[in-house]
Length: 631
Image (cartoon, rainbow, N blue to C red; front, side):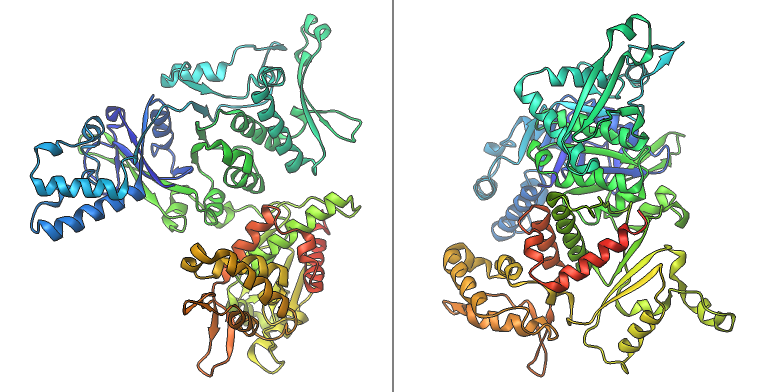
């Protein structure tokens, strides 16, 4: 749900304003479950974060209902009172200048208004409902940049006070009674308390251990223990209190401080998030500290996709300087990004401006000071023609890795995106401009006109559909050139046995996804009947019968078999119909690939689903082996 977050204490934001709006800042527009603040140093984002968390009460306003509400009021105004001032009829003005008054008096003095306005108001209320304003007194958690899992020492003795937290309270006036400040310095005590608390807290801790198990220890059971040695304590030794990690099947117990700063960093973040009360608000300053881009992906993936965390219904506010966070949010639909900038007023005071932006805005990267050299390189890269190919490969690798792990296969190696491999989308014919091997001096001009792909990554696997291209066609010549350039570090994988990547999808995959592309109105009243027709259609036709034809031929047969209900076609037109009457490619490529990936991540599609097609098996194994070759 998208919502506007309103602050009761507007005076605390006097130096902030919303882009293109006048007056004091009283709300943050278009919030989502995850809200990311970006900007240059001293742009006000951390200051805003601390001010926001210091509010004891918040008001959530459903932004979609506001739009519908306004539209209803304007429509009735135009119909019944043309020329009347719209702002008098809009019960909640778009700029929310009167929101506090509205909150205190929901009827907005409606009884004293003319009859037409009362009628419009009542109509709008009945249309939209009254629950678009919700007060919230959620518990607030703050994870600052001052954080560590290391024990701090003074003259070889452990410092018991949380000096990080005390410093923050002194510098920024935070109220520890209202805000839980978690710096990691008391992680030992927190773990000890969690393991010996009531059932609800212990269950949260179990989920945290499960996260560590899946993310870092290949699914092996993990026990996190706060270990106390009274003898060492009496001797004044600093290691009398240790956080130990026991991994199933390993003889040696690991100490948390031996796992590396990146793992410690994500342990601090995820511990507090897993242990937070449901429906809370979590404020995090620069979570990327000490974390490789792949670890940043792991962190954001957990916030967006971890089912246990999603059930907690947490709302996150995060400041960051990481361009990798922005890149990852392109794939997410529950993230909102805010750009912070500063301007010097005539009075000499600074004014901070907040702009709700899209992830694709290049200005964001400029605000972060991102250059080409800022981007870390993964061990290898997988080049694909577009996002749908990327989603399918991610799904195949996810299912195959899970299969190897669960079956105890000796060749299993845990692979992580943006650490062990990264995707690169080369967009069709643009690939002509890349060179994947060193060329001689006589071809220097050709090199200068193209791009040296091996400068982007030292190991590349390039995946390309053949599209049944003949050797003498432009694409046929291009594919042959790639194969001629093959080296140990550049592996072109041309899929010649199928026309396009959708031809890989098995009958069971199509059968379990095609309903997403059926007429939505018919589904509301005829879902059971449509499901029976889908079963019949896929028992009659097999997607793998003609792998070198456009997938539209197969889908046209399915379309005819499904037929119509009350004259309405059950299947939407999701495949290309050419002017000569033949059938072409699948139209909604990205949507289909996202459904397949989501079902794989949720466990609906497993390796058993994909291994029905030998081409998927061969392709996935070759990519997996390429990734793990130098691990």
